[in-house]
Amino acid sequence: MNEPRLLAGRDLRSGAETYAEHVSRLGPLPRRGAVLIDLLTASGLTGRGGAAFPVGLKWRGTARAGGSPVIVANGAEGEPHSKKDRLLMSARPHLVLDGAFLAAHVLRSRQVVLYIGEHHQMARAAMERAVAERPPHERDLVRVFSAPARYVAGDSNAAVHAVTAGIALPTTLKPAPALVQNVETLAHVALIARTGHATGTVLVTAAGSVAHPGVLEVDTRSTVASVVASAGGVTEPARAVLLGGYFGAWVDYDRASELQLDPTALKDRGLTLGCGVIGLLASSRCPVCETAGIMRYLAGESSAQCGPCFFGLRALADACSRVANQGANAQDLGRLERWASEVAGRGGCRHPDGAVMFLQSALRTFPSDFAHHSAHTARRTA
Image (cartoon, rainbow, N blue to C red; front, side, top):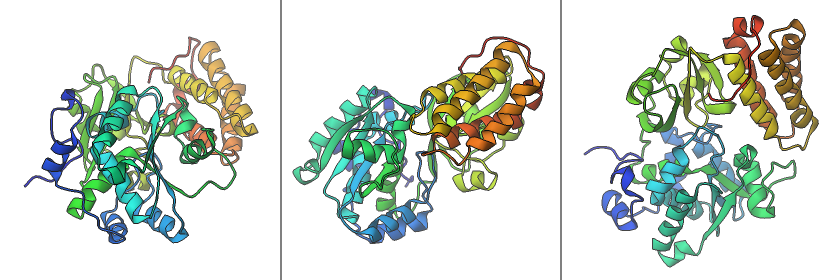
């Protein structure tokens, strides 16, 4: 018998799997109780929203804290190129609900919040229809909340702040008791509860200069090169890969192509799969201009709650744009190196750290391009 996968079942183009189809394909949801935490720990499952934190460890810590935490199924998906979460919610909503209800059962929660990006209308409609198909004791737990279309709104702290206080910004205040899990993570939990072990797959969004951009479910032992092949290959020679999205890192294409997607293996190399974006930068595109465009975007998405985020990211974005628009100069290149090190670790949330990590990867991967850049207009297309 083939192992279940997240996107198995009916054709993804035919709409959401119904509850009857879901149960027929996978069987009823087992109520494993606290033993599920042991299964999650043994499975090695890590979070698929960006942080890659061990899920079993996260649930065990929440259980030890006691109380009745809110379960937040995070489908905000504010990363511009990521499409995996909205596809999963649109096509396999009951897997997400299964994982959320298992968390509620194990952690004695009385509320499940579906935190869905406000522009992901198809995903929201599918999730709401799926909730309506569930038994009353499950339906009564659910609340649907629209996540603002802001990059920071997907932060776990911001999600808790949003559903408890209506403000989708990270906060330094102690958050309300909650378990926040990305929707893909919860879908994996639903399969682990049935099989006792991880699927060994991950959802990725292939973007940039590939023939068929979109979402793929691939084995974690797959390489970047195999993902590119599954996405139809490159449309033109690739210069680099943006691995993990805007809070990820630029990696030279030759080096990136042989990287396996296993989160632990990537972490050992100082990399992360993040939100699952694998974005190819074509050789015809300017990496300095691409980096400057993304830095301007991230500066504009600041929470504006602390100096390093509000002023620091703007200064870095301005310096990047000057290099892109006016050409390389020693003063701005020095500022980029110095200011990046000064901003890192000093923000009130993880937003400036993620932006700085991205920028520093650009300076490492494209040193000659930054040092010898001639003026032309920056843009964000990576």
